[in-house]
Length: 525
Image 1 (cartoon, rainbow, N blue to C red):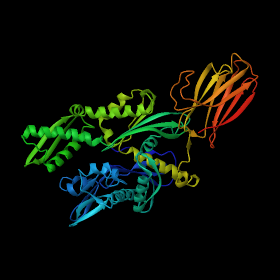
Image 2: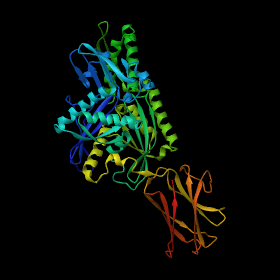
Image 3: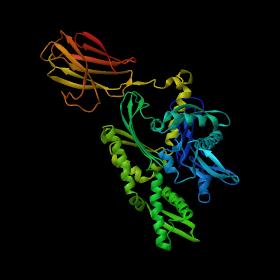
Image 4: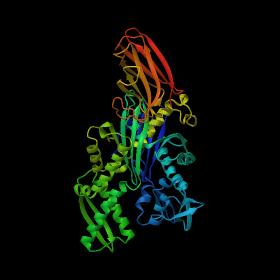
């Protein structure tokens, strides 16, 4: 189902958002503050990342995937995960079980029969073919030319992998303005915190792609997205749900026709295509019919599958998804109740069981899934393009922008003491959490001592920033002790904390009734 155009939030000239996944790719177009997904020549809003080679031609996208049954050996897919990986890498070894992978100067390459001869293509060359297809799709919307674009990549991508992907996209005709992480793009697609930048909180991005599952926690602070924790599982994806249904259908055929097709690769490939179509149908209807002509030895196969049956088959996969969510929450030392919003992305997230699982896991969080999940990341990348184009002359070039936003390496807290001997504390307050963007500012009102005519404040550096009990020393490091003398007992003290760009903490204490002020500067990490 086509999604409506999305408001980008900033008016600028035309550009694109690109998301090339392992299983499918999507191109979003932005112009005059509006964003929409560009359909390919078949009218589809996503394009399979398949490349097939034959005696006469090369096919890309749906045509390559459609011909997989007849041309399995010469059809290449799921290649993005191999970008920049050496031949001896574990990922390559897993891939060798599926495709004709060869060693070309210690790099991964594919050996295929193309136009009557054996030809070797590198991972970069396959990705270049796919990016050319994306450029072709983009040209159908914007005509010929070199197109400005933002490219979304996995959080796990190294700088080398990002640079390789940028080079490939640039080579085919895209002008890559910036590379952003997929979870950040998903958050941008929903304008998360774009209109409430003073509020902080946590958003969880759950992506279930074709061959992987990523769960990412984003902290929102001052309009900046900070990834605080993430887990990835490259053995869990939408294809696993298809595989479960395939096994069920295979058993049904054996029951109906008394034949086991498990050793017949052609029959399995045909049934897998039927299972995938059935899975997609069950995302919108309660019952789906699966029919495959001449599945084995001239025998046709036909059966029905209910959504309830499919979901019962996928219980273990659902539990694995829940386990990934719980793992990332544990790594961040957060509770489910701390999550304010959950974003679904990736084609696998269309499965109703997955959506239900996320809703039940976070009953108090707002579920963001009204944008088709396989389009979310490209739309977010296009919104970033719109922003960059609108402020093109005011932005620092990306090469100079790297690491521009400094963050606090350790959390900072304060303790208000009752006296000079540091034995009695009346208040504890976390001022800045770990990874707070710099510069930053906070303000609190404390009260002076009830025992002396003074205000005693200890500034501490913490290892982390969980809820703390008053007086809990833990492994805190004392940065400074601030003493404001000659004030009324229990007088209200307005205290401002300012993190400066050069990593100094400025503490300004002001007694509210007399306006007496004390300012100190403390170096922080």
